[in-house]
Amino acid sequence: MQSWLDENLARLIDKHGVPAASIAVLADGEVSATAAGILNLNTGVEATTDAIFQVGSITKLWTTTLIMQLVAEGKIELDRPVRGYLPEFKLADEAAAASITPRHLLTHTAGFSGDAFTPTSRGDDAVELFVRDVLPGLAQEVPPGAGFSYNNSGFVVLGRIAEVLRGKPFHELVREHIGVPLELQCLATIPDEALLYRAAVGHVRPTPDAPLQAAPVWSLVHAMAPAGSLLAMSARDLITFGRAYLDATLLDRAAIDRLWEPQVDVPPTGEMADQWGLGWMIFTLDGGPVYGHDGGTIGQSAFFRLVPDKGVAVALLTNGGSTAALYDELVGHILRETAGIELPARPVPPTEPVEISADLVTGRYDGVLARATVSVEDGEFWLLDEAVSDAAKVLLPEPRRTRLVPLDESRLITAEPGNGVHEVLAFREPKDGRAAYLFRGGRLTPRGD
Image (tube, one colour):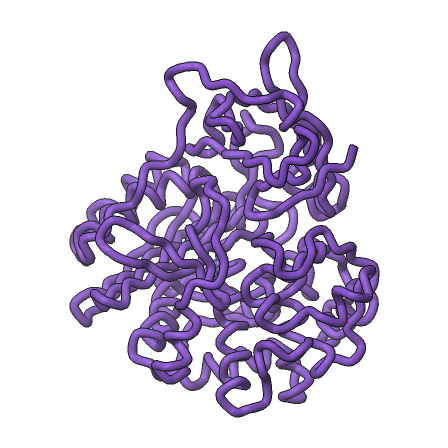
């Protein structure tokens, strides 16, 4: 595997327009790792295997680990209301706040607004202030337990529970309870620590046709640390974390098996897992089950996969470009060769016309970060995306129009690929012929018109 990675990584990142990537693979008890490309297009610093990349929402697996360690110690019960640990836990919907449990948070079924990337502090009190000042204003978009809707804010709550029960800030818990026991060598839990390493910078396109440029900021807000805004590491260290799950060194085997039991189904869009366990994505693929998580920050994307039955782990870290297409080709080859796993083809527009009700899909869907409006013009479906928050304007500085075509009777797909893949929009819970929610990017966004 090492020779194949060395021979092909540079070629593949060039093919898919990715400035830099670092990959590590555990197979047959051995770790292979390589890196290629440029970490920062402004400075020309080259990628090496000890370079660190942000892992984004893969952090949620680290937060899950901290929570399950507390479960093992008898300090947390997954089905006890969150207020048993955080009496100050408040939401706009009082009944929901009183009933939400850690299990709801771990499975993204709590239903309150999940993308509140609101700055609170750059210090150790950032998570505490989020729970105190931001959560009370978050709307209940879906009833608790009603369905999967990806929730970053929920993992901030989990991080705060760990802080309260351990008496230390989240970043210290990550290092003390995961980084130190695993002897990780290239790990930054806060931006200050990233200065000690060769760190990747994310790259974005201000408009769809513009060339990649270095992102204007390095990280998302500190308050979102337990959800994935700050953690950075090498691909090799992420593999060491994965190996701890294969070897049951951070948690016992019974606890890990609980994490990998399916808890909720995910609507099919071709970009996420089929099901969610406790914190973990579950992929049902040809060749067997695969577990893992993806992560995305401002211009950085990360992919992490475990195949326990074959003792295989894969970590791919990138900093811009068509990263999903790179994942399909690169990780697809690795899983095929090491584990006999075949990745499914991503959805593409159908070759024959498909009918879908315009009444079902057209309308405005209001999220915390952005607003999506689906309309019909001259018989064609169009999507208008508009940022409604400062955080979203970093990635979407101007409104963006995209042509859509029907995929089936309840889904639309982008007519042209973006960064190498076609995005699927699913429309859920029809009432009086109109969808109540748009499912996109893992989120159930309520209709706003």
